[in-house]
Length: 256
Image (tube, rainbow, N blue to C red):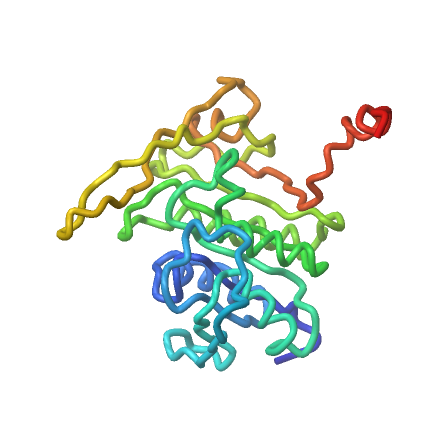
């Protein structure tokens, strides 16, 4: 591993055998030296969870043609922490997470293991980005997404990112002739209207299966949901500081 070439950390939440992480690796391997650490099983929807009640195991993976490729028994955030504190010999120049199977637009960012890995990287002072393809098809074509990854990664390596900011990148699943380009925009105000499908097991005891619909509350024309529908890749700069600054003075005026 060279100190002169950029050091790139690759991870995901769909697991080390997912097609998306192979596509992600292929898209960045020419840009620098790669260290890859990914969960040994799917971790979608784990958000920013960390493992504190069980040991975390990490083993070398032979699925990639590099020595520094490992599968991890923990969450995506566990993977980032292990990479930063146990595996790498210097802080990486870039962390890329994905390519996720399925969109992480709007408030999905709060549940996403893909984006939580990027947020964790940002918290560690690493320029970080999460990539998602808007398709749940395990045999999806990642060609456009790979070009986006290479393009965005090159720009981050050249220009860096502001402290505390990572990028949430979503790629539409469209034919190449219908692909329009890239829009930098804001996150839509949308959320899941949750429902639970109640079922009975073989012992006649109830259990629940989470379901629901994802609804756009704004229908605005400057959001990630809007531009994805138009055939654009969206880039939303995302911060982990969740302070509601516009409410600070209002709360300070309470007679507490």
